[in-house]
Length: 126
Image (cartoon, rainbow, N blue to C red; front, side, top):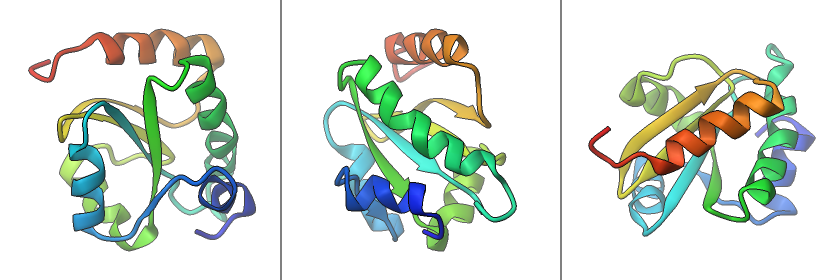
């Protein structure tokens, strides 16, 4: 990672930084709901740092109903192409190894709350 607010997610909060396809596959296959944070280039996209601040607050607001990881730039393009979530920064939600929803770009708080609630109630077949 290349921004202190993004680096903080792993260094201070202990979120894994997924550096390979195998890391990502293992993380999203675990039980529960998982969010991959794809920051993009924080030097070119100021929203990346904003989402790095917002995501821990969202996790607290949803009382830990999902865990989080940061996607390293080494596999970022691969993940974006595989999920067809091309805009960054993005939050991609998984359950049982399958994408159940995504939120690209920065949103206002109310939209995050509404959209994440919808995503968390979806089945994997959605």
